[in-house]
Length: 468
Image: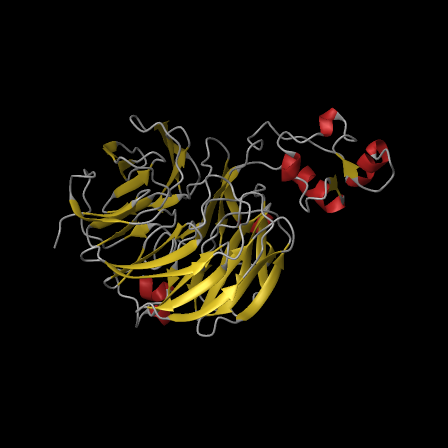
């Protein structure tokens, strides 16, 4: 399967590699991974443990190498470790060039690296894209930004067909770029009419034609050509701030979007800009100040969240985004891949709108969709119909969740914010097999291969499994 999904990587990526966020195809699944342990902890079933600097990026695996990023002070760090021993093979740093605003849950080293099997590519919002070869030799740097994002640009880069692709969603001048992996030069740059988003895209290879980059954004999901960044198709119906990553299974894309104030029944029908200006623009400047808006039209959150250009006033673009946001609905939806243009009515197969995750991506494993909501609520759905199979609390792990689930050997692994790793039987009628406790927070999504789980905590990287 992996050689079909990534034919140009076949010569350089081994069958057991995990080269990007959520694995080879962004699915979070490892289909031939042996038998990772069910019960483990800081002192149990640990093959090795290595102290690492702080960061929230996930580890990626290539051959005998592990790559991850970190930050210490103003140093933005890329690290290479031995997959066998955990020894640090090399460490390279660049200095921050600025300090973009970000949410406290975000981090300078939150985006996960990606590799083409010969080189590694890392993104830091406070600098841009950086590439090293496998021996740690610098190849190129591409400064990007500064970014105007409410919580900070955080999407991870992805790779396909000689292109490193990065989504730079922000409140003004958002875009997606395809970068030549050999030279670091921008091959194409496509504007995106979105605001702040935090979702890593997924690569899709249709039966014919070039690969597609499918990227969630404000209120819609969009597919672009890997060759030139041309927009190919889109589906409407997303919320304002996508955070989870899409996943593809059986020719269907699944995406879950959640934003505060957009659960079913919370929608508000705001009037169009011209009507609001006529009623509320007291000084007749063609814009809206916070004190001019009547209370029913005020935002439920901060003014900064809707004042996209940060000038203290709302113009027509900003009001339109705010109006759309108040009317949108949270939901997980299944989209049949294919088509062109607006495929909302023709290709959206089903939607599910209850008890949705904030950050964790959906996992589709053995025809079952697994969802994990803050507070420890797990939901399974039939991947073909969206029918609820089971919904219950994860006893012993009633916390918030920021890592995404991964699956292997008929089991699902999901980590809580405060260091518990829950293992479920991968069935629609799931059951808890173990709740494993660590003594440090976990934000990174684990990587799995050859019977081992590579798990990043706040200050350590663990290889969980039997030592070779």
